Image 1 (cartoon, rainbow, N blue to C red):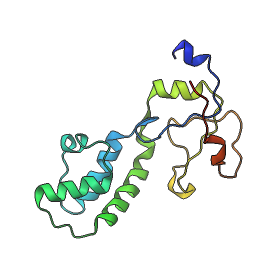
Image 2 (image 1 turned 90 degrees about the horizontal axis):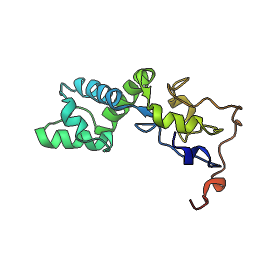
Image 3 (image 1 turned 135 degrees about the horizontal axis):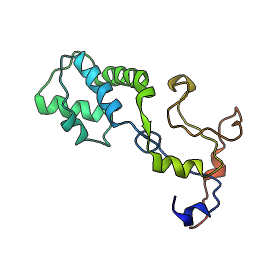
Length: 149
């Protein structure tokens, strides 16, 4: 870790899990490819990778438009299936070790806005808090103001 970062104090670190803390690219591809295969639609990984950052719904719509496809289910249902397939594969993702070093250098309490039922029991690469997080939701007012660097 950069020495300057190691000497800093922080009250809060915010990281996106998907693609930032852990490498989810291939698991996301597999999940969407699996959901589309149920529609008899093939998804090439190179085409998918070129659209990193788009929502699953936008990727599906772009693919349908590009190939002039008529899908048998609404996009929202295909996305829901993709999400279910991704959760089945969540244990296969691996942490981005350099980002994880930053997280682990601080005394953190991980939290998420997702419902608990949507989360794998122990996401790989997740920071393990040094003390248990309180059962209540985080208080957003704490995080509204960050000190200037």
